[in-house]
Every structure is written in structure tokens, then in C-alpha cells.
Length: 134
Image 1 (cartoon, rainbow, N blue to C red):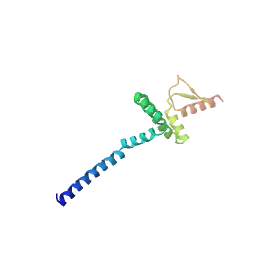
Image 2 (spheres, one colour):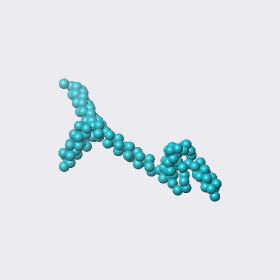
Image 3 (cartoon, one colour):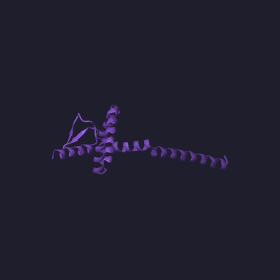
Image 4 (tube, one colour):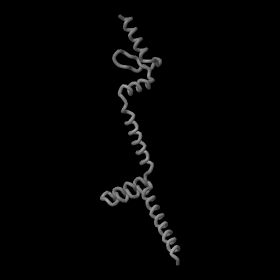
């Protein structure tokens, strides 16, 4: 065996070891590899049995877990939306009202017989009625 053949074999062996090392690094840095590493770390603590039981419950009941996750997501979304000013929220609530109201001067009262009108029209008509009585 010549010196060149020995060097070529050493180079090929080095390339194979390097490929193997790169594959191991890629496996550890993939999302599933990171999750596996974290799960292994949690299982080594005193909370390992609790974690295993929780994982088993999720595997047996995936639909309720997804519903709870969706509910929590919706809650956090609404909490983020409600950081707007109270005036803006009140204005949006007034715009969404579609119930016909009569303003009596004190509180708004639902009147099923009246046609849907804008609340300011009710105020104007109420003032006219009051001034006509006087």
C-alpha cells in the first residue's frame, strides 16, 4: 500500500466521521430534537412522573385539550384587544346597538313598539315633548 492510498483512506474516514457528527448536530438542533432534549431533562427531575401522566392524558383526550388551547388563545386575544381606551370601547358598543331605545331623561328603556331610530333623534323628540308640555 502506497502512501497516497493510505492518505486517501484517512481522508475518507475523516469525511465519514465528519458527516456523522454533522448529522448528530442537525438532529439535536431540529425542533423535535430540542423537544426530546427538554422532555428528557424534565423526566430526570422529581416531576417526571407528573409530566408522563400529563402527556398520557393529552394523548388519550386530544379534542378537549385542543378546545382548552383554543379557548385560552381566544382569551389572550381578547385581553390584548381590550387594552384600547375605554372611550373607544364605549363608542364601539354604542355603534353595535340595534335595539330601539327611548331616552326618558334618566335611563334608556327598551320599547318594542317603536321603530329603530338613532338615540339622538329620541333625545330631540323627548326635548320637544317636554318643551310642548311647559
